[in-house]
Image (cartoon, rainbow, N blue to C red; front, side):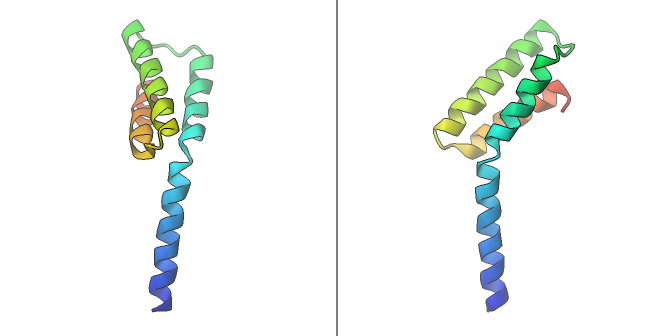
Length: 79
C-alpha cells in the first residue's frame, strides 16, 4: 500500500513539473531565434506564431496545449 501511495505522489509531482516547464521551452525557442536560424519565411512566421500561442496557452493554464505548440515550434527549429 505504501508503494502505491509513493507512486501516486511521484506521478502527481511529475505532472506539475511538466506544467511549469513551458517557460524553459520558450527560453530555448527564444535562444534559437536569437541565433538567426536558416528557415524559410513561412517557417519563421509559423515558429513565431507557435511560440506566441504557447505563451498565451501557458498564461491561460492550458499547459498541455502550450507544450504541444512549443514542441512543434522546437521541431521546426531543429531543437
